[in-house]
Image 1 (spheres, one colour):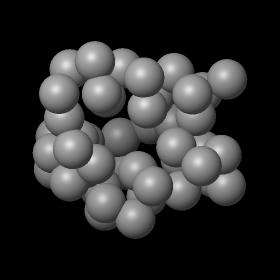
Image 2 (tube, one colour):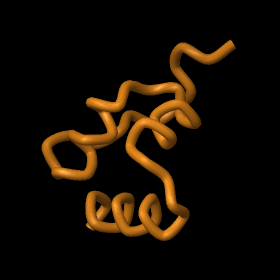
Image 3 (cartoon, one colour):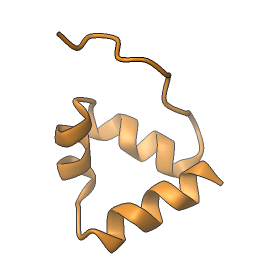
Image 4 (cartoon, one colour):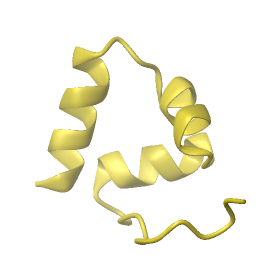
Length: 49
């Protein structure tokens, strides 16, 4: 469910995986894995200052 919603919303907002990754401060590969359902994002704001 998360994977489909993420991709649908990203495309609806005309964002590339790279754009979304930059906005979320993660790698493009992370976005790809999330959209494929291979992984899910961790909660919290680790790594942010």
